[in-house]
View 1 (spheres, rainbow, N blue to C red):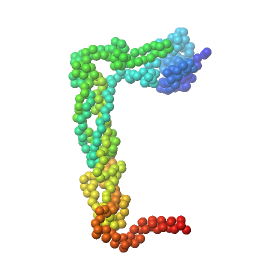
View 2 (view 1 turned 180 degrees about the horizontal axis):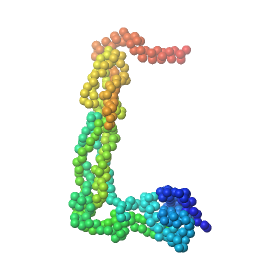
View 3 (view 1 turned 135 degrees about the horizontal axis):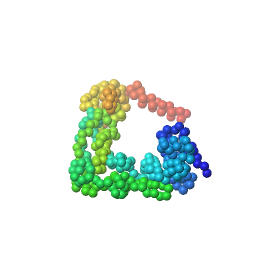
View 4 (view 1 turned 120 degrees about the vertical axis):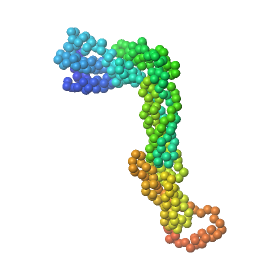
Length: 382
């Protein structure tokens, strides 16, 4: 059976760039990879075909030869028998590329740094829960916190080795951090178990950190909490997490804020709400009340006569600041008319006299409601 054109196999034009060819290869190799298509002979065939086409076109010299001579460029006397450039010779390198880019999670490995060795392991991120008051959220604050964490070992400067010594190259992987195993057509790369992918081993570990390159200590850190933060706000302190293993970069510290409930105020974004009970006489005859502000000040609110429960009064600019802006929310006073309790005999007599002297205009809502009720029952009886 005649071989298909390599450009056709990858689904690209002959004028395609190296990046276009690489992208097409990655997409097709991922689709036809045997791990994703177990016991699928057609997928395995297509996978081999895609890999062979990529081997020919990824190299500028091989591609130029293919463009001029076609498949004959890779037959006897060309770049080598068995495929472009000697398919068997380059297959391991090609598979290493595809596994690193597409299937790294299957191998459990890490990206490699210079000289084929894995990069230093980054330290873990840390979480710190902090509770603040609403007043502190209003004004902002600088807080001091104590965090137990792993820090770089001073004795070995984070290397994990005994002072005066240095790590040696891992004999198992030769410093690559990975080992390869051939299984028929496939070459599989795995993280080296002897050095855990670091490419080097410590023969004389530091006596303080036992080769880890870090020790556990409690640190005191300063945290700037800006004005206007809300419940659940997360503050990131870059590089203040755990130190990396053997000189690796540190992780980050995340401060999660929670705001303690306030005695008077309920918060909704930048607005504050305060429920204030007032006496029946104040609601009926008008008056003034004095309410607290979140900044510690006071505000006077005029209550007009005839005020009912649920009435809201807006105090502009008395709410919470909006984070990192000059905008400030409002405060809303919601009144509750309190029904008199524990009346003495004289007070009860005065209320009875008031009730006798009242008319429908004194309590229009209740009068209107019961008038409708009366009409409803009369309609039912009729």
